[in-house]
Length: 128
Image (tube, rainbow, N blue to C red):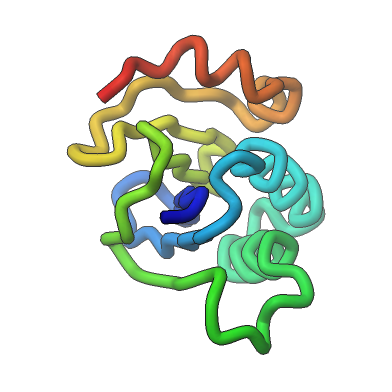
């Protein structure tokens, strides 16, 4: 096992999502996503650059590693968390989705999401 977490990035809510799977990053998924959104702030209106900056921020120096992270489009490995995050750049929202059905559990503006701590989010996510 690991500490698997998944975060997705999309230009618009109805477009393809690129998902980043982290084998060991589940417990820091919220903080990592906050850092990634902040790192991409100057490119929020340019989804291609914003996504590359955000993913690079999370992966950091592990780009050369064979393990630890994976990328996929519109599907992903099952996380250990009961939720998946999905960042939508043009809306400037972060969706909290159930891990299995991708039902929207919650939605936060970037401003509200950036002020969350892990416990705030986890309190509102039902056990699946």
